[in-house]
Amino acid sequence: MELAPEGKNFVIVKEHELPALMKELEKYFPHSLKPDNRTNESVGIFCPPDRLERMELIKDEDILFDWHSPIYMNFTHVGIMYKMEEIFREKVKGKLDGHIYGDIYVHECPAELDLALEPLAADEVIMKPLCIDDVKDIHDLYPARDIECLELFEKLVRQLPGFGVFTNLDNELAAWSLQSYYGGMFSMQTKPKFRRKGYGIQVAQSLTKLVIQRGYIPFVVIRPENDASRGLYMKLGFRKAFESVRGTFLPFVGEDPLPVKSAMGVENGTSTEVEIPLEKQNALTRADTNGTLSEKEPVEC
Image (cartoon, rainbow, N blue to C red):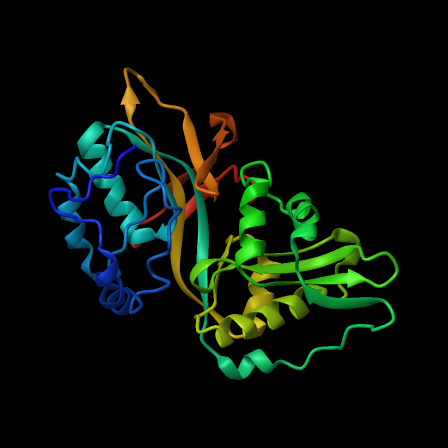
């Protein structure tokens, strides 16, 4: 598919313009999160949360947007998502489906990162960087592996740092934490039989320090019902910055919406898609008018 270099209100940035653009955008990270680079099916919108009226420019943008195809948006500021929902309903009478709600926590308290932790039992486990051989184990442990493809994990491990706690006896992966783009903490997981040993906070602390050293502001998406992760990251100096939503905008064809397909990874220039059955999508409704959402029938992720 050929990319249109210019739309009605937007243009594709030229390489020599990127440095100046990034200086402007970094004022708002992580309020605007990096999308998966896919035309139509994966869209990211960068907009200062206090200037959402600027999104009106999107209304008549029908060159860079295909309004009659599903539009997937990754975790995005709730204000941006609401505005996009209003525009989408006006354009094609469609709906935002498959909502997943997540709070964005940003590392804001450097002093708390040096939290004194119990050292790992050197005779039992060792912490070391993740490598490509660990990917299958990581993917098997990931709770949303049905919608996140193995190739995505391979790409992340090849390009970005991560840490794992491994047993000395048989090199079994007990816990892991992996960086995503722009300082995002992709996920932190501990196998059930190794929980309550402090492995999770060890890998999260080590990775957070490394992400800062690499020049990023660490942030993480935490589901609102995940008390354990919230408590862990708050101990390390993360604070809630804003609420976000991810989901797919579905145009109606006749009386039924199109099926949902969300892009989950790109490997060697080839996009990987996983179709999400409608019965597995969870619905979110507005609980009030101040940007708070309530969740029904949550899907594990």
